[in-house]
Length: 293
Image (cartoon, rainbow, N blue to C red; front, side, top):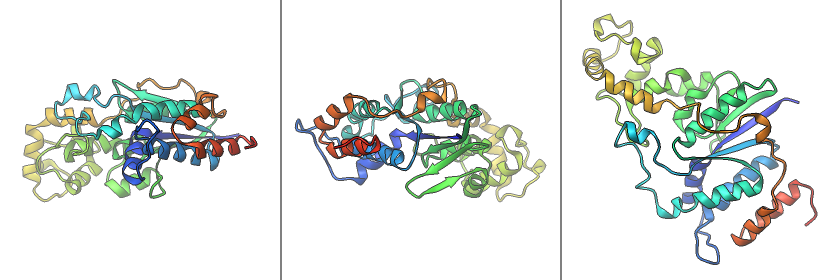
């Protein structure tokens, strides 16, 4: 039977639920509403028929990219009540029986990319769904791999990526290198906006192929002389930003798809749910396992 793999951006989901759901605290006072929300979200996937899943998290937010660019996001602006929920989220997912990839030197994005590369090599896998709206992961789309924005229920294939960004998936790192990514903390190159970057990269595909002299460009772009001069003067910086924007596929994740198969919750899940006032989640998993209440 063909396998469909779901790879979930746990960091994105934790942030999303933190700002979307009311506060919920344990008896000891620890905030766990976002943890409960993410766990419920993952159980929802299981209820919908998902069989092979993994969740990637930023166990420690600084990564190797902070060594490349000092201003890269380091987690210093993260609300402490979000940061303190990463560990219980990872523990709760593991108790639920979900494969978890907590990243330390790498980022959750890298784990998702590595997991997608691993799963797509398996002939039994029909589809890999990277569950996140993060534009960085658009570069992974192709063949069996799709990006799924679950909140908007939008699934992106290669054509959809081109329609949204104006460039194919393989050009996303180049696109981000030029326009920058404020969420990740690098500015891109001055003057290079989404439209000009998409127009030029749609033709040249990579920043390395863009001529220094605008007179040699095969595409017409307003302000091309200034854009070309900026790129020619800052090619090293553009290459650095491209390196930062490129997800890594060598992050430590599962070595085969079988490790992603959900076999049911562990014995620790009941204790976890009880301790964190999440009994309703326990009841949902019992129903999934056809276990009487």
